[in-house]
Image 1 (tube, rainbow over the protein chains, first blue to last red):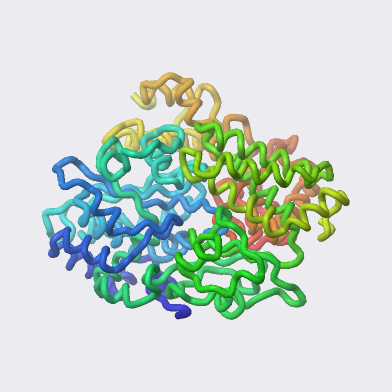
Image 2: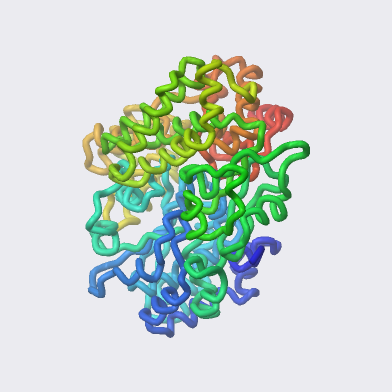
Length: 421
Length: 163
């Protein structure tokens, strides 16, 4: 358990973004070997590895790939670099400081599913990262490791960088596809799933930056090696973005199953002087908050589910006793209402109702029945929305009302914030 | 075709980029978001109706359709903005690390409130959602550039460098 640099092994090297640096460390040798393997072998290794989607949903990657039909129709691989979940800044590290790791992962994965064309959908705000990737692709094509004949093999692989324009919902894979097709980012009803009808109604696999980057070492060292790390249901290593009230915020790569307290109090340096831990959001703003008493657990998918939350994107937001939970929940509610695509009624209306209620409470006009009203909205939205954004909006609201009820009541009954904010 | 259909001046780079984008995808419409970015950059950060109609012609779409797509995304400015668009993140990690103080500091320095533009047209100040700089909070963008681990002093230096 603890820190282990697999994905992050190159990022601290000088000029880590350059092809020459990447190749000096053995980069692209795995792609070369992969192109000599059967695509089905690659899919098998990824299945054996137990790799799960690192964007937040944690869906088994090998299984997702196996849904792609073996037809001659064009297939697409899409890299989800939209990184919009509040608290998450891990993909940015790979994009900016080890772009070739991502490109090699994309190339191997494209080959595995029978695709010749991959798109990196990168959020519009990451303009610097987009340029780093474009230069890296150019380097790789000029060196003949990508493009028409990678390593002289008759398997073209073309990677294109596609910029988003500011929309959290486009991190949801089907909304991403609509956006990639030049439309409003509207999630699609499933089935059909992207593996059968995705980009341009063709078979498509969408994977997160970290997921695709993980493929390189899995193919290099074998799926069994990856599965030897971690826990029963959570294999390998994961990037954790930790922020908020800690001494050493940043991105750390941990073996799955590392104790949560070790990340917060050792690796990230613990609380600021004189402050006490109040709450932790474990996996990005959409995951239910945990109190200071609920983090004596391991960082893996199953442990977080058992604790009533989710590992999500591994974006840990630490909140100390200077935090007004009510105010921050209100801020997050505004985020989801703003980002709702508007297609389905429960989310479009429900997210705005939650903002209105929380606004009243923050402004000293709350009523005690407002807390039950918020919980009731949770029941109306929960599981009834077209995409997970509606459910995500409930994460902070429901968990904070359940676990910090006294703080809400202080705002409502005494019309004041106990933190003085 | 790209230059002929265009009612406003377009740089050679801009024209070349648009041409490349229109031919880059299996389906042309995929280039729409990219072309909106290029045209907005050519036009000082703002897409007026001439831009929308021009792009509609390029893609053979109704202008209302192009406007509908543009209005969905936060990075397209459908109203004029100042030469420097200051975008301060106020989402949770920045919020608990002093984002509000940064916004207030800028409001006081520039004499405008969030959402407004200075009378000389130089600065527009807005608050935005998570920029992916949570570990280096508080953070802001000015046009396309990131500024992180902000303090009022650092903000002042950035603003002074905006000529």
